[in-house]
Image (cartoon, rainbow, N blue to C red; front, side, top):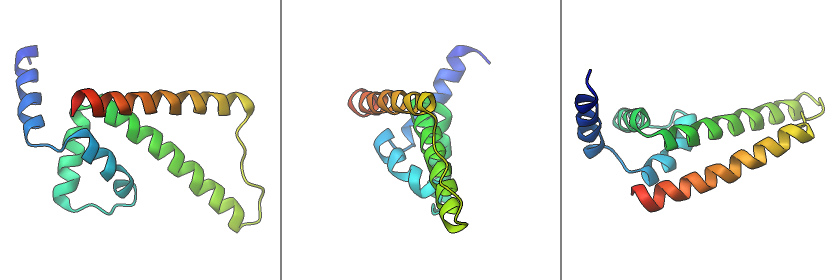
Length: 110
């Protein structure tokens, strides 16, 4: 497909989709499978064209998985998993950059 056609399709899709602010609000509910079929379609279609929201969702999924593992460790009386110092610093940097990215998306894209 030519770049012109792809850009045209993206513009058409974007016109009928939710904005980034609404999509980020749906992200937590999406992890819990608590979306209607219409919300799921709009959510997934938006993710196809928005790299910032995909990145936000990936980070949210990572934290969700980490918290689930930590909670499971408490239930089995195993010690909670801990991040190494290097991993903790990488996570802090990623979260700082995601806040900046989310702010950028909200301010400039919506």
